[in-house]
Each structure stands twice: as structure tokens, then as C-alpha cells.
Length: 341
Image (cartoon, rainbow, N blue to C red; front, side):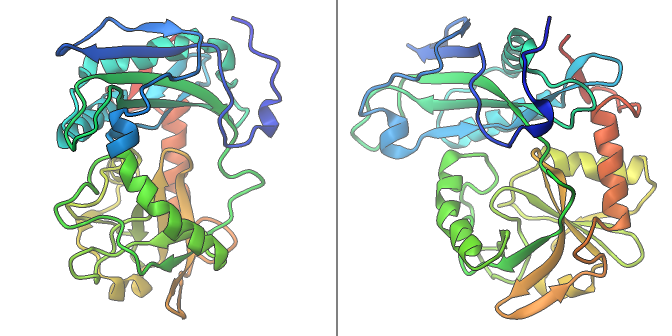
């Protein structure tokens, strides 16, 4: 299929409408077969459960053109599992995992002309999501739901080169103990909007959230997991029941251990020990891993030896290896790459 006439090199990271999206409706206790449609608008009741009580969850993933010309996506089975976990926690019906993966593949294939070419630095962002769609006025779960998948082409996250981030230790809690921090609920992100905008107004790129119970341990940012590197090249990631299990972070951990031969620890990370690490990165779908150069703890600065100019050497190797796997330059572990076309 001929590609759309798009200036791939100058795409931003934002929504641009494409031709098709997948929609399936849940009613009377069952999901319908679903279909690809052209209409990008969602029409729901003014009293819909998602509008009244924020009953919604979502996923984020990407499709790529590999070096050999295939269109692929990365570990969609893990996104399907995570959405199932989100649905169960929010009293929403589970969209079956095999159907989730199939819907993603259908939507990408139907928008093949929007998948950026290999080497452009751009990718096709995929957004599966679900919400309560029927009228709910009492505080209770909806009885009808809609599952949708849309895609949009996005430019490279590091436009103009990598610039290590400056982040602050936040006074806000991202999640409550035994709350919903471990799932990808829309309400979690709504709660993070004020803290992130406040951080931006103060000149910071992101927030470092501490554990909500003791406020002594590192959790994550509003939308990414942390990954630290010790001075002897050990990779350390924070462990907590209220951290969202990032698929990118889990993949980077496997890359560190199995491809780079590095020792990896997933454990509680105390804020007081962060100053002793050599490198710091934020893991997520958008950027894979974003380097952090400096953390501000209420006026006290923690500056990593990797500096503010570029990625540290270990984080750079992790980034290069994982993106190489995603783009087909490096052999992937079995099951990591789903070929769509």
C-alpha cells in the first residue's frame, strides 16, 4: 500500500486522525463482534459511567516498520494482560486477550498507509481503551461498555537529540496504598495533571513520586517507571505494589540481563540512596528510556555523574539494544515481536 504524503521527519508527538478505528460494544453481558469504522466521534449518554464516575482504562503501544519492511508491534500480549488487570480492578468486563491483540492488528493493518517508513524516526502510536457507556446516576458500575482502538502517527520523542531531564521530588501522592496505582486507569492520570503542570511552572520536566505510605521510597513519575544504574553497572528498578508494571521497563530488565550480561535488582529503592547511583532513566512507550540528569529534592540537588548532555553509557546501550530489537536490527526473544504485515 502506498504511504500517505506525510512529512515523516517533522511529525510532532500528538493526535492526528487516521482512516479507521476498531469498535466493539458490550451489552446484555456479552461483547459484540466489533468492526472497523471510519467515524472518529464517540457518541454516549450525558450520564455515561465514564463521565460520572471515571470508569475507564487504556493502553499505549506502537507499531513499527522494521529493517526488512515488515509492520510489527511489540509485546501486545502484555498490553492485553495489563488491560485485563485494569478491567477487573475497575469492575469492567474483560475484553478477551486474543481479541485485544487481533483488534490492534486489524486497526494497524487498516491504517497501513500511516505507518512511518523505517529509518524515519517516527512510529504509529496505538491507543486501545475502554469505558462505561450507558447512563449511571447511582454510584455503581456501568452495564454497557465500549472498547476501541485508534492509531496516530507520531514523531520521535527526542526531537533534536536527547536532553536529560530535570525532575523534582513531589509533595503529592501519585497513588494510595492498596489503591489503583498498579493499573492503567484514566483516573490516575487525571490526578497527575495538576502536579505535572505545577512542576512545569517551576521549571521541572517531571515529578518523582514517593511511596504513599512512608514517603521514603522511590515509586515512579506520572507516566513512567524508574531505572537506575549503580557505579558498578548494576541495573536497579524500584519494587512496589502501587507502581504500574511498565512493559518497556520489564523489557529493558530482560535486555540488561540477557543481552548485556548485567546484574539486575528489582527492590525497594530509598530516596536517600538515589544520590549514590551513576545513571537514572524513565521507562515508557513514548521514549523507551529518557535519561534523567538531575533531581531536585526541595532545593537539594542530586546530580548524576552521567550529566546533563547525553544518556549515560549503560542507559544508551539499553536504549540502542531495545530499539534495535523493535526495529528488527537485533534478534528478538521469542514472542516479543508480533508481525502484522
